[in-house]
Amino acid sequence: MDIDNPRDRAAAREEAGAALDEALHEIKRVIVGQDAMLERLMVALMARGHVLLEGVPGLAKTLTVKTLAILCGIALVLQGAVQIVEALVLRAAARAATR
Image (cartoon, rainbow, N blue to C red):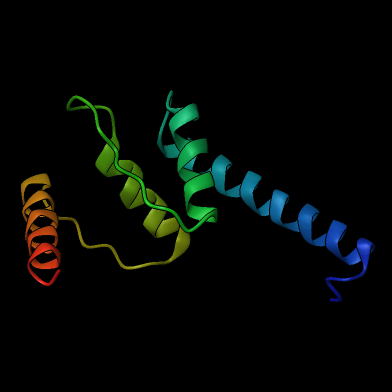
């Protein structure tokens, strides 16, 4: 594939779009009623960004992450929110101490 060739770029976009549609279809089979969150999560994943899922218990946050990990074929390690916040605070403190 030649990325300088407009036809190849168009084909790559079509292929990526089809893969995204298929992934969304598969995850929506498991997670029902959270379409906007799922689409935003996929955008963040494609952009190699970070996502913080917040919400009251029962909104399928953990199930969403587990399902997405299975769909992407990646290993998943879940940590509690308290552990994550502690790690961020410690990291920020360490950075401040080196300045």
